[in-house]
Length: 186
Image 1 (cartoon, rainbow, N blue to C red):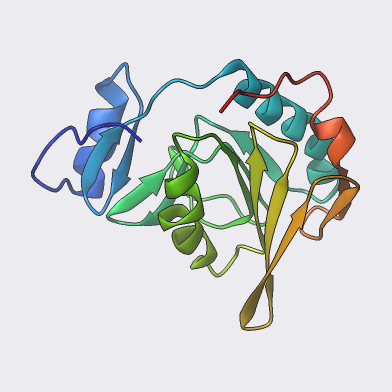
Image 2 (spheres, rainbow, N blue to C red; image 1 turned 90 degrees about the horizontal axis):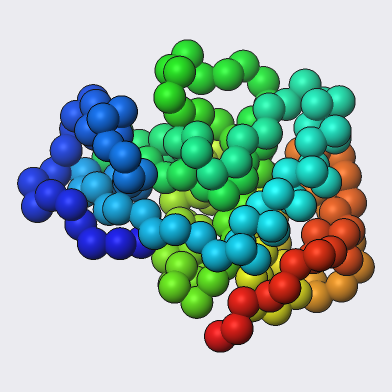
């Protein structure tokens, strides 16, 4: 995440108005907008591959799949742009963001790792609708899965094989996810 744009906290309405007029995307964290950096080719290809692999399964279940440019409202003070999210059930009445995904994925690079594993992980897992949070490695073929089970969260790391994603009822093939992707150099 980039530098803070303004020192004074913004309301959700002021943030959405600012975003509508800005050529640069910003995430809102506790009322403070942060400019987002561009992505690597590996990052982009991983998001595309993941969307391709999940799209049909999401559609079969009546879910919507969004990538990178649709906002996820965590609270009136925090809004992110997840790399990928799947939303089942009724869509948010707001045209600019969703609020209840069952799956969120972030492609992890050295510059985003701390944020994706820390603040975003806790905020995403706080959503009652969320079943699975995926961290997809851009520097190595590695997928971390945070799956809600009862009142807890099970953490699993995979470097090969398949990852079960119950909200879309699919076993994600990691070889297919990384197909054609030249990984980032650390």
